[in-house]
Image (cartoon, rainbow, N blue to C red; front, side, top):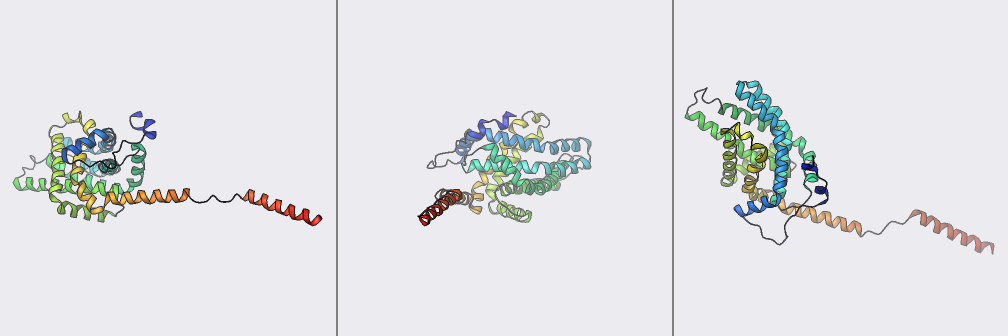
Length: 294
């Protein structure tokens, strides 16, 4: 298990960047982030892949047996299991995008515990919708689908991938009810449509290739897993997220407040030792008694 929990990972901080270093953009920014945090992406993505295995296996049986029961089980149960891992994966990528150094496993475990419950229902809903869409995709020839059906299916994939791109970052960053998360996801998707479509295109190309060449792609899926499409997709929509939720300014303010509180605590005078105070009182009483005797 040293792949994820090696002891030096607890004692060695992440590399981070110089505070005065200007951020790169586009492909240069992507290459910079991958060169710096590739190992963290792979580990978080591999854990997300393990969390999604029930969904993948369930959908394989659903498509092969044409059974709706397997489809429903894969979507509901597989989505419930995958939700916490996907939100933790999104948190790993977001921390890299804002150049936040730290201890990956400690942070991942804390974030997973904090967001696990909030990720269950979104995971179930997303898994159920995707399972129905994938099941329909593999049975389009059976139902003799026309052009309208194909257009509706493609549009449903676009909307699902678009909303999903904003759901997991919000769970990782904010404490909102499900209705608020879905509402924000829809508004962000429509309000920043070009960037949203860019993120969707990245995911569509990746997962389209995975589905097209399935099961051959199972060989590379454990290595590329979820980090490869999520990283450039979140890079596309990070600016809108940061603008709407003031991510970096809020986190910087929280750090400053924590630092000021710690400094104020260090500067507080030490409390008097009650034992020393009692001894001083005893000595004073003894002196008074001695003077009375004299």
